[in-house]
Image (cartoon, rainbow, N blue to C red; front, top):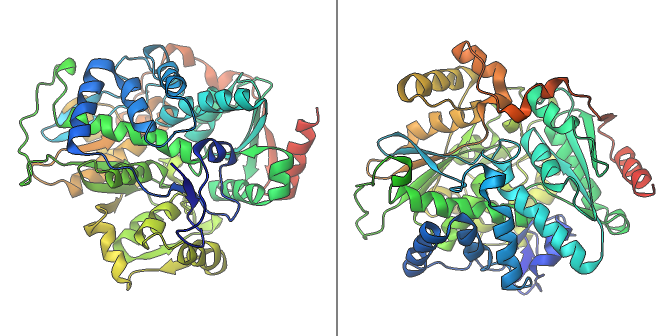
Length: 495
């Protein structure tokens, strides 16, 4: 398996192996890595994986999926890394990603049982183990520079804390995360964890990461890597739970006391499933796109946005228009307060027939210069829905409050604001006979003020997080200045 940049000059471009791009993150030309082709999963293979999942568990399924993309780590080592990562001790349940039944044909896939109570743990825990493994194999160190709107930062820091050969420099928008999210990150006192609160919005943080990664001399000198979803390894890890969700939704989940599904099959005899994904940076739903390209029978991939509806606008009109910081709304689903979806480039690359030069013209030229591009009149745009299955919708503060109330009163299920956005948009996109799986984003305690506003009471708090907001904090505030960030990294690396 070889990987190419989304801005590669042509199909003959020589690809890189997995462990090269694992530590590299962004490609030297500014593009994002994707496999030269997607491995195909037949119905026979999917049936075999169903058996693997039920008899051996999530870690075994993860190995099956990952081994299609990773051929430069010995199979026994990759299997051991999966088994080390996906355990009941880390994720609170041996099922790892159980489905919760909401109502007939509607499910929530529980992805937030990890150490930081957010779906980002699903990939970040594996990424931490992969980094440690490969760095030890090479005898090298890595300085991770990341950007977070709330959950990526804490998931990365909890996954990397104490890891040999790894430092983390995590940027976040000052004052724009929930108090719980801030406390999770800023209360960590590990020597290899460094938090930087940027005066700006998430997109400013993301721009810093891309700018530093684009300075190839600095990147090589200081061994800069990434944990944001621009890193292919993280997105790849997320592909696994689409397969796990599909398997459960098409068989029911008797271990949850829900019973066995009796859903009708499609005309071709294959039962399809739709997924609704709360999305700001497009990483989570892009993993679903990869699973669908592999052959997983996905009907719709539903992109649910909040008031920062850049992605919804594109799928409705064909116009991708980023917003300036002043026009990026501060919302009650803050992890999606993003107006520059970095992972979106991967899908557009596929949509354009893997034309790297055209992708470069859009993301490398048009977006930086104009702030937008338009594909609405391009015949290829229609394929976003017809060939690739994408649909979208928008949820507002009033919508998520009502969804939280309704889901609690009707079903006794408490959801966080982002998952509420997913449920709201999922309801608009459901198809009779096709199960809809909403991907859970985080546990409600991470956004307690919105739950209080919706229901008049605090959500349940895991005991290990009691009093976290009152803990001492270690964080540096800085302006959105790339040179200043590079100077800070260089100084700390010299200690």
